[in-house]
Image 1 (spheres, rainbow, N blue to C red):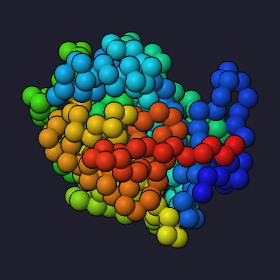
Image 2: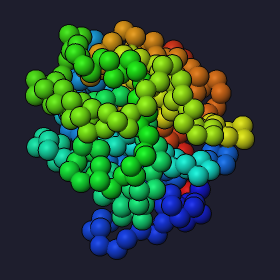
Image 3: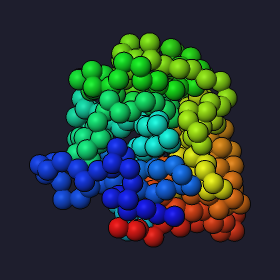
Length: 310
């Protein structure tokens, strides 16, 4: 199923521009039926490991991180976005964290990596925002990005998500104290910049042939996932519904979840769906390129990354 970059249409991932200064391309492509999908790394977000497991003991948390040969205190959260080509439509899923956050200096690379791949931002016809946290809308807030987008670009955001960020509730979250104000500011900036381009939807929306978004809630009340289905094949980009620890421990709550109990139910449902259908799964915060299958492992799950074809 995997396709090398050079086999895809040039608008998805061309040979790239020289002078980016990067040793690796930080993008990976697959073909889902007749639809092309590219996962792009925005970088990593160093965050306290406590945010991965707010409802379990320190002993249990340390055991998981020790088993992964990871630090016990800080964890490099992967941050991925996606680009989808269906027919004449080019769809960006999320935009990364952008700039302006002094504690996230190792991320915010999405726009640069799109451009270094030879992708003109004016070619993007649609953008799907899984939810309005700053690491998903921040790339669009960067100075000069809006001017590079086409004037008729459509930005799909669930109506529930738009309503939530008018007066967001952080009462059930467990975040570093600097984060909620930054989230509020990023959401307000995004709405101010792009309100005329936002196309709100209720439960589901077809963005292009074989590409649709559906509201799951949980992580935020209006959080959505994006399904890509073509010729009997399927990939679901689950946004923040599933984290790295969520395969082994789907009931572990995340400090960035506004509806943690709902988020657990959503996570288990998506994992069961992927395991039962054999569809590919990709996520914003699973180690790049984050594409793989899900297998059941007793009461938990096992992530089976794709074999890289390059």
